[in-house]
Image 1 (cartoon, one colour):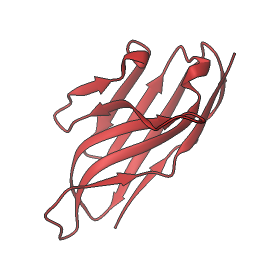
Image 2 (tube, one colour):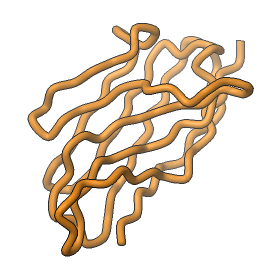
Image 3 (cartoon, rainbow, N blue to C red):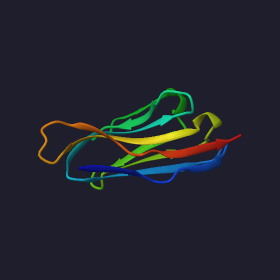
Image 4 (cartoon, rainbow, N blue to C red):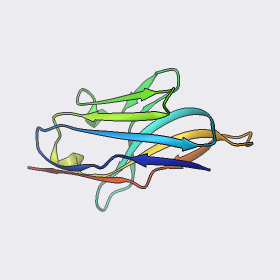
Length: 121
């Protein structure tokens, strides 16, 4: 089995910064993409940023220039540095990874439990 464990989010004022971390553990053979999603109250979960094992990164338009995703392939971790936070960044942030594990021949999506980020105006 595999576990994704996120660091705690928190409450921050608009314009502030917060860093989220996520560690994947278990019988992991390989990880392709790692990503952060978020879900605001009453809205669908959306992709915030992703990073491939090659290092290629993708950001949703609303966070470009403010958020930075980084990954440590040796440690199976993915971080999200969030700067200049805005109230609309509020939501539950989920870590996601596409993992080949154990004796499986197929990659599978795994999710963390989510961590709350609240940005006050």
